[in-house]
Length: 164
Image (cartoon, rainbow, N blue to C red; front, top):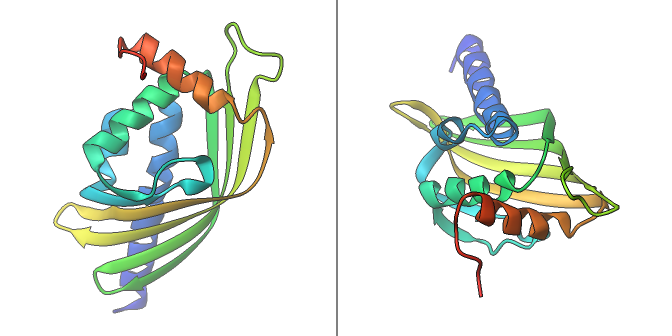
């Protein structure tokens, strides 16, 4: 692989993983869906989500429910370390995510997490797609319960019956 091909792959992979943050923060669900293979292995146990294989459509819909209940959010991704091996790639990047609830908010209306993502991608006819992703929270501040409140609010906002 030439140096130019490696640089182009690295740029394309960086764009894909950055679209993850953009999709969430702008609530752009088609954009978020576009970065994933149809089936994805997700490991988000550090924020209480069961690790496993999910359909990308289901994962994106769950993200929509959660983020419909938040106010503004901002996901920042830095220090992308990318390894390309033919049609497979692995990326590790630092992350910091700010989550707010503003309307009828509890006294502590902010939850911030930091850590890193691990992402495995495969080259497809449509470019690089994520087929496995892990969120590894190494620190957090603020109100961790905001995510539960956001899910409740998101379900109500989207007309989804509460879980029993």
